[in-house]
View 1 (cartoon, helix red, strand yellow):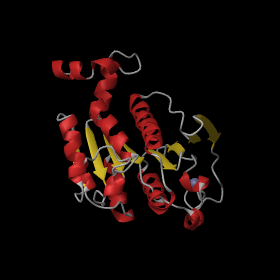
View 2 (cartoon, rainbow, N blue to C red):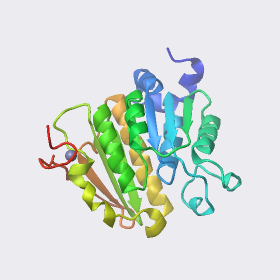
View 3 (cartoon, protein in one colour):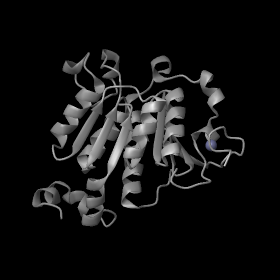
Length: 250
Ligand SMILES: [Zn+2]
């Protein structure tokens, strides 16, 4: 049963047939992990906390730098030098004190992720690092947990989800083989426009909520390319690659 306070707090989404009281209970029971609390993780975490996701694990080993504030909207100027995971947890607790928040002030390496991914219902990859993205892909597949991945460079964003609870589905390494990583840049070297992160991060939070609510997830095995400069949106169906080093053997 939802309390009177919960019914009031979440009333605008409970009114929607896609959510309702049953959907709100599913959101309250959900355990999500947000990896990377930068330009994507900021809107993702803010929207998921506001929506009443019951448990959020926030993972980031970085501290807040002055150059982050142009796009990482969960942080304020008086947070400079502090841990992103801890400040984000404080901000989300202030936004919604009724949910459970766990701050992990560390990078998501493979041994840790292998243990932790199985403890949550869904993972959101909000990192800007191709190497960590491949670790998340492999760990979520091993733990059979779904993952919603996104990235933005310049004005261009990408969004794709994988359902690793099912066999014979493609994975991130089918799309971008790990050997291609040396050519990748992150936003510290390439530049990025803030509101494009807001657009793609909002889409990422939305896809996670659809997943929890049992609604169709359009980004499942479909790479969505978001062009903030033209407001263009394209989607490409991803096929499993037989020679994929992660999912090609079974
Ligand atoms: Zn694969």
